[in-house]
Picture 1 (cartoon, rainbow, N blue to C red):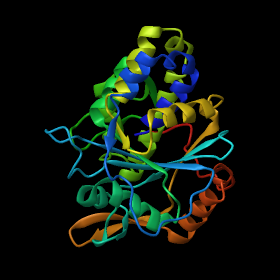
Picture 2 (tube, rainbow, N blue to C red; picture 1 turned 120 degrees about the vertical axis):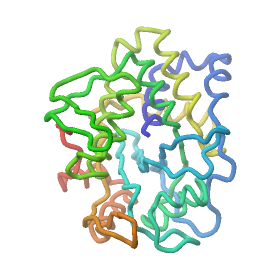
Picture 3 (tube, rainbow, N blue to C red; picture 1 turned 90 degrees about the vertical axis):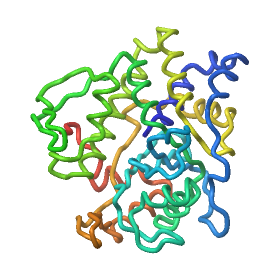
Picture 4 (cartoon, rainbow, N blue to C red; picture 1 turned 45 degrees about the horizontal axis):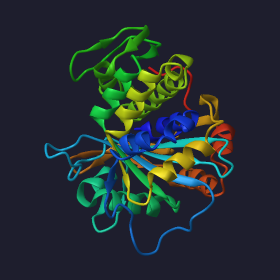
Length: 315
């Protein structure tokens, strides 16, 4: 999930607080480090912008993420001037070439080869250098939502979840962690299936950012600490992303507000079947234009020019 973004912005606004050595050890020290999380060999050239591959996954009973398919994949692009952030969702069922596996769903890369293969697969698909990787456990998502006292979400039209019979009534409700998790994981009953699920996830992240950046959060030290504790206790990042790096990134993003963050999904052609698997086929020409814009530090402009950003109303 986009918890890394929330963390970065949150840390920026409380940089003075986090300069305390105890808090740095307590919060930064509980972030899990993923060994060998980045691929080796030929890779795209780095730029002054920063690209982070964010994945959401359930941990195994032993506490690890090994063998789990990522439910969520998003490329977080932080512009070189640090004045805008673009978030590109990649459907988990995207049919792509996975190095060593051949044609497969993109989330098989994480399951079979961990973060390094997931990064390599995304880099081969996009020709965009991934600088860092973050994995958030779904329990952390619930904990963060609850630490914020819930997050308000408006549902424009009543919709029923065909998998469990749950009905989401039209209107605004403040979702706790358990309810929010059900909201962002639904795909049955949504017209666009997994594509609408991505929109829901991004819609919730947008609302989550608004709640995190609200006066009610930053004037309440106890809530603020609980929010940061919920994030760092359920976050895993590559070994190269140090606590100091996260603090520096946060400071560089101190002026970012929700309106400076653009959400979109990689262009798709449609869905189909590969054997017994339901898959998503990507629109490669349109996708190439998007990823070229990312490489040229023009992602936000591309999203605006193509009117492909997340709508205000998401069912």
